[in-house]
Image 1 (cartoon, helix red, strand yellow):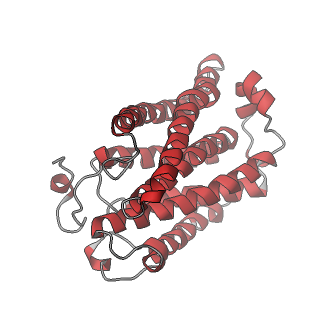
Image 2: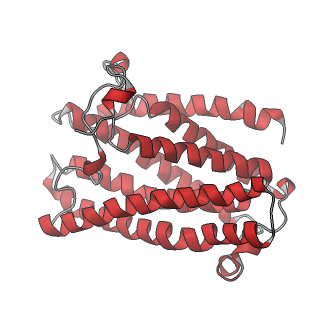
Length: 298
């Protein structure tokens, strides 16, 4: 891997993604409050400012994760080492084997670098986008994700890295689609049923992919590989970061289960306007208050 590959391409790609995101959905910061974006032209104008901000943000994530899910599926299916049957029978051998950066295809490397760039852009935006009560959880998630991706890219563990990225992307699509539909359902009642369907797909997909497939096919094999094969500490860190990511999955699963019961109780998804309404704080611009004060839960 050349110096150019990671140290120049990623910052440039990150800047490009930030510009695309800003042009599509804008940025929640008082310095950019009056700057128009593309989504302003296609969403209803009579929504509250808070709802419009969240709607545009979730439209962006819906578009991005839909694109990267299709892109990731294409890359994964064209990798010679990938096999669903072997993933079930011998995940350690398939995902690890002998770490070798030379078996990375051009498509895999490009996809990996684009994903690293995306999460770096999320880390940059988190200080100015819609404020949530789970700010520190998201900050922790972004740091863990970037560390895992960069570390696996450097050490040659791109097989498990690609698998983890794909598992996360496919469950994020129905999440952001459901949130987008939920905000639109505040104005269009006929969207409530599609919102229910999207939320059900998200809940099932998240619980299945993050609480079953991910630990079985990624976390446990990584721990077995680190312990039984007596790998050096740098390789053991991969398993540690995967376990930390799993802890976040359990926290979010708890929120989703609470939302499922709320949905059953109110006979409809998004009774409070957002799948993650319990997690979102007041709409205070990031530049108006210090982080130490603005993140307090009301």
